[in-house]
Image (cartoon, rainbow, N blue to C red; front, side, top):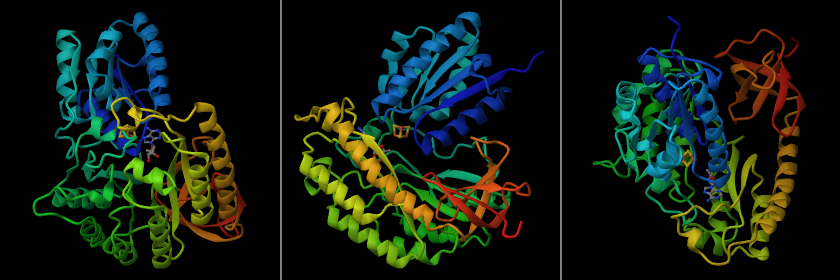
Length: 438
Ligand code: 5AD
Ligand code: SF4
């Protein structure tokens, strides 16, 4: 008998990448093995992202392609999971009759039962509730070096542009003892990097009774007496406490990198986005963090063209970017998402205007990034080797503690190893280096 196969196509954030490892685990428990080619899969899963319209559009394109595959192999099961599944629910199943399962992120715990039901009954299933029991599930980890550990799901803030609270529900935090147990098992099992995940990670524990502070969780994890790197994504600038900064400086495993989404540099735009901080407060936080943590790299997310953003307000974002000197930035054109507050706002900025602003911002940010990476030329950095490079599998890549990608030259690098390399070339995307004298 030939082996049954599955394939998961993943869009979106790290939370989704982690969920893919959970779907994979369920499918492996059912006797399916991963295939690299989606058209050969007996079960094909789309794990989707709804945060911007492009990802949504790409998904519907790919779904069209999957119709063709299923025509040749009618027994193929197609599951659409993740945030678009939650957003479009039944209407997606109605529109594409070849979809067997539509399952939201809050329904991940029922995924296996849903698949069994489909295999037995061959009837389509739609399962989309916004909150569920999704935090203590096991994952089939794709990396043997770095492990994601969810600490919370959902988000209890409602930034005006953001669809996340609607598709992932309110904040639900995981019990600290379950997190600690999992981290301990992972580092005992040889993992060298733990990345704590939460939609809004520093709001972890605010919903628990008794409350647990995120900074305490960091300290407890730091108490595990092992050599590993600890990271967390993504924190929210408001509520980034002094206690958290102190925990970051005092817990040796915490790496010198923070992803701190700015979204906009103008106070009026920030207010209408409901971010709860001003540009000045953000700059102050950046300065406090840099003062407390030597060598800290700071990366960010910025949205260009929020409804009503004037040319002048955009210039304030440009100024803040020049001042903050981010080590990297994800810069997005604002995309209206039905159901959010911003989608109903008047004065939507014309697409062409948004793109012109975005290109200007990218240009300025790229030049900052290029200079920041150039400063590493000739320096020796500590790199955790992750595995073969996606672009050039003959080379290994890794990351510095401050999260720069380093392509390693030479053949003596093993995944999981921490090595010191001398940087001999720098790029916009990262660094290249080899063992000193090697
Ligand atoms: N349009 C454009 N970008 C968005 N993001 C979230 N919602 C939108 C939207 N409607 C961006 C934010 C967030 C990142 C994950 O995606 O910058 O931090
Ligand atoms: Fe995309 Fe947000 Fe869902 Fe992550 S949580 S997959 S970024 S919509």
